[in-house]
Length: 157
Image 1 (cartoon, rainbow, N blue to C red):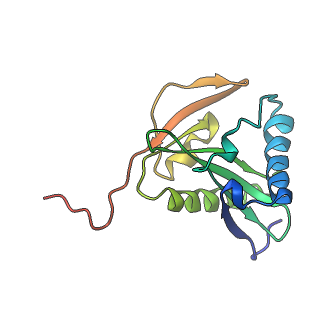
Image 2: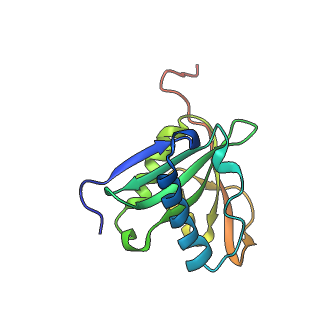
Image 3: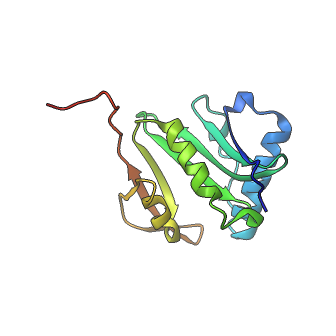
């Protein structure tokens, strides 16, 4: 179980060391490919893009939870690969990580493709369903969007 000393880390690919990147990929593969039985090309090339940010929660060792933020060509942020290690589930780690991710995203619009059983979780973080449900790798997904947030000093008259 996670301790009270967990911390959230953020890095671009260039700032990740080989061991950390290995541990992040291992968590993603252990859950998405092995646990969820979805053989798919986990290494899609987007991890190394200059605009990608990797966020993870650690408790001094292996990552407990992870997500990445991609920069789509139109400037929209795209959150994906949201994952929590089995031993860390149920303790609010995904919520902590999502809150941190939305701080990184800032006021930009943001999209994600939620596993459909998690729509309510993402709704609590300001996302709304933006399209019809579809099945990918045998798992129902729902596209969701969180519109750009006005800056505190933006005032409409």
